[in-house]
Image (cartoon, rainbow, N blue to C red; front, side, top):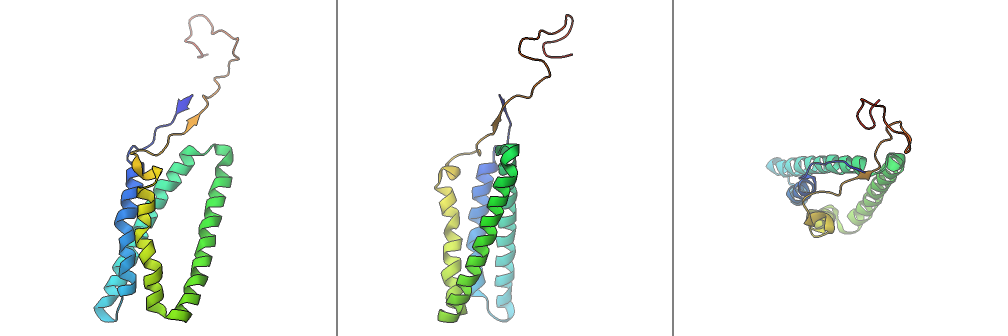
Length: 158
C-alpha cells in the first residue's frame, strides 16, 4: 500500500485559521456610521480570508483522502450542505431581523459564529498535528502475480 504524504501542519493550520478569523465576526454588529464602517470592513475581510484559507485546507484534505471514484459525490454533498445552510441562515436572519431588530439579530447570530472554532479545537480533528493520511492500493505494474522479471532487469521493471 502507498501512503500519500500531506502537509504535517494542515490540521493545525485549519484550527489556527478558524481560531484567528472567527472572533472577527463580532466586529460586524459593532458597525456604526462613519469610522465605525471600518469595523465592518475589517471584520468581513478577516473572516473572509479565514474561511478561504480553511476551505483550501479542507478541499486539499478531501481530494487527497477520498477515493477518486467517490470524490465527485463527496464534493457535491459537501457543496449542497454548504449552500443549503446559507439559504436556511438567510431565512432565519430575515425572520429574526423582523422580529427583534437588525442589530440584536446580528449579535445573536455572530456570537456563536465567533466560538465555532472551539468545536474544531476540542474535536478529534483539533487534537492532532496532521489530518489523516489516505491509504490507497499500489499501482499495478503491468505484470501478473505469477510472472517473473526478465534476466538483467529489476523486479517489476520491463
